[in-house]
Every structure is written in structure tokens, then in C-alpha cells.
Image (tube, rainbow, N blue to C red; front, side, top):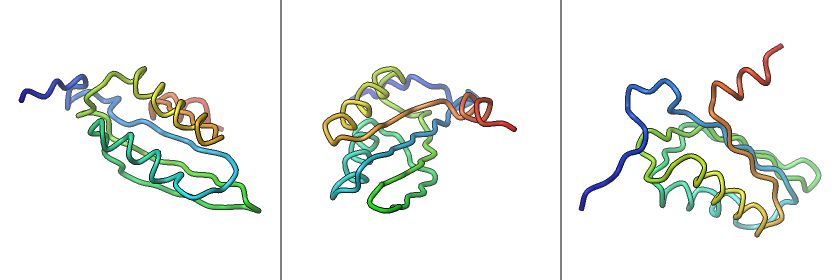
Length: 102
């Protein structure tokens, strides 16, 4: 079975930042991580915390071997977020860094 890779390994924009925010509940990490695993996205780093029942998570992921395009991945993650009552955002690492520079 041939695997279609949409991102070149030498592409400098292989990383995305995924942020998740919402009411804490069972299965948030599993729900997001399942979509990533199903599409061959590697989680490089993850930070999550709960502040007074508000769940926050930031993930850095490698998309160079992702089986779907970034737009479709974003749609899947955002749909999972809506299903779970969460806000999910996906941005290329360079866009994230540019938007959050001081």
C-alpha cells in the first residue's frame, strides 16, 4: 500500500502548534491524539494544565508525514473540539511565532 506524503521532509514548515481550551472532561487528550495518530502526525511536545476546571493544552507536532493536507487536518481537529465543547486552533509554527512575538 502506497502512502501519499503531502509535506517534503526538507520543508521548513513541518511543525504546527495545536492549542486546546475548554471545560475539563475525560478524553480530551485522547480525542485530539487519536486524530493525529490516524493521520500520521507526530506529537513532539505537549503541555497541559487545568486551572479551576478550565483545561488548556499546547502541542507541537511534526506534520511532514501527515496523510492529509493541513486544511483537512484543521477541520478534523476543530470538529472534534466542537463535539467536545472545546476551542481547538491549529497554526504553522512560524505563523504562531510571528503572531506571538514581543
